Amino acid sequence: YEIKECDWSSDVCSSDLHEELRATSVGLVELMLSTLTDQQLKNGFTLSIAGVGDVGAGILRWLYEQHKDIFDKIKLIAIADSKGLICNRKGLDKKEVLRVLTLRDDLMTKEGREGRKKFNLKEYYKGEIEPESEAPSATHFSGADIHIPAAIGTQLKTEEDIKKMAEAGTKAIFLGQNIFAEQSLLDEFEKYGITFWDNRLASGGGIYASKEEVVHVIWEGEEGIKKYQSDRNLHVQGDIADTAIAIGRWITVYKGTRSEERRVGKEGRSRW
Image (cartoon, rainbow, N blue to C red; front, top):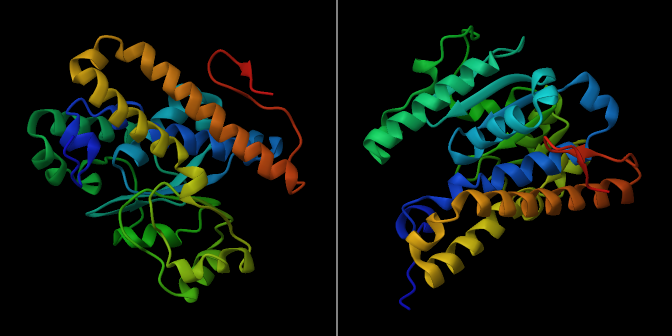
């Protein structure tokens, strides 16, 4: 086989299995929830997301569909796309955000990547936002309890950036992209009281699904995969969720921050 550098989800497999599986999103959400205490889950927390592509959008959709009780308690205070940021520290209208993300999907279905370029989160969102809503990078400093970077590119380049995040109030980062901070800064998060879940943990689902996608497309072809896509999605998503929860639970129990049993999914199956 000729191997070339490419985006497997868009260049090799036009059915976009990676996005359809919400691979990174599923693993990231389940990891995140598995690390929170019962009190945090009960009271809710503030959340910010940088990026509304398949990862950022998938995070909100998975929370809404699979963890509706927790979704309702979360206060989403900031979310950004490549064109700008919408922010409301009293809480954005999450269902309105989901509606807008559906419009993005419609644009992409009709116009492909050109539709993606046309989409503007700030333009389509009809809820209340703070006047100072500004550049996308400001999402990182909104002060949400939990911040999820889900966009391309290195965002934090100095120790001062990490200090600024901590002073704003951020307590944890779950990385939904490959690189967020300069490698030399990764040890500084703990210094400022921020728990940093890097992409090897938080994005493991995406890596798993990419491998699955490549293998299945090579051996079965796109048409072969489509024949049983729904069943396969459930199987892969279940594997991703189980792996993420196992990682989160092992680390938090090991560190002495969590010992309770968790139940996830609509069917309420105990993972432990």
